Image 1 (spheres, rainbow, N blue to C red):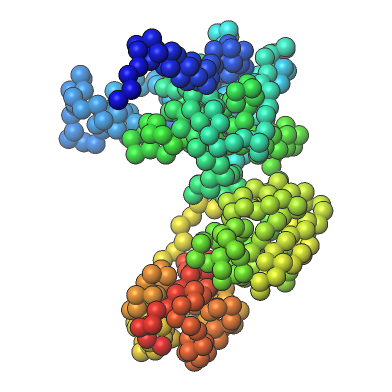
Image 2 (cartoon, rainbow, N blue to C red; image 1 turned 45 degrees about the vertical axis):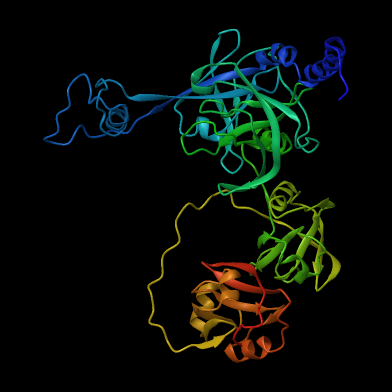
Length: 474
């Protein structure tokens, strides 16, 4: 065994320690330069009249001893509040985007506020006016009175790389100008709340009060606006989401010019191309946005078809379904756009003019249908199916054909996530006119081939990857 002296060992360790220290970034200069552009935002809202405690309930003046219960009673029954108290404070963050006093924050920070105060780094408190606010992107543009204010510099979220260092400056829990750092952990995240924003995902610690604050790269440029956290506790758990600055700049400019945001509308329902579905549409790998349904009378009606995979939109690559809404929403409404699709295994270039997306967001839940008695069904590919009539077609928006899945019996159908109540309209790219057609198509398939089934579920169309096995009953 070869021996090393302590001196030799020490010399071997020095370069390693030096490299590690050298690679870790120093944020101090960036923070000193950019903190002046970050502001704290507080709002006041007029509370509606609420009833006092219900009759028969008496609470000691010192409280119940349970903080959560005291907070509930305070918020919903005015317990513990003075009679003349009629407002509540909401804290958030923002940043100055121009020397003459334009400030950006989140829509949800100022939504419904009767009064907005902007607190600058030099401790000045200024009244703010809402120039415009956009719920879909969760962005708002404010205006304060001032001259030669320190404004941020915008970077490019498109050039941002996964693994790149970023920092956030904001007011978590009201502690203004707090700094947290981390890396970009993913891009183009499609969140359930809104599909028109391809969020930046980071592991930067973002907490209540950080909303609306800037996300900086190491060059000191704003690359995102902190907007959401995913948490089971209400606090940071390693998943934070920011609005890309390339999205924000377009929204800010429209809010500044017109006070509202106009977006393009394609008129299609899309879904992700899964690894299982990719070969059924002639793709080597999972990419693009799969058109599940074309809305009648929409801009794409008669031009795009269910089963088309959108690969490029207006010259921009569509890597996933999450990126398409952003490209469509930011496209010009007065010009035709070129769309490259994969159709029947071949690339096809089509052109159309977009419509305008309605600004109103429908938050109403769909009505539930009453259960109907189960009729006698045919068993095909492990599914109990039956024909549908014109009334059902009209109700679900199907022009012709379609069969109803009454029960799911086979393993292959279960693995494909076929569900009771689905309306099957296409099978392996062919129209399913009725149960008889479905039976004939089922006899023409190979047991080792994955096929695409197009179903209507809860009023929306989607493709399912179905792979029959040798034991699947036909």
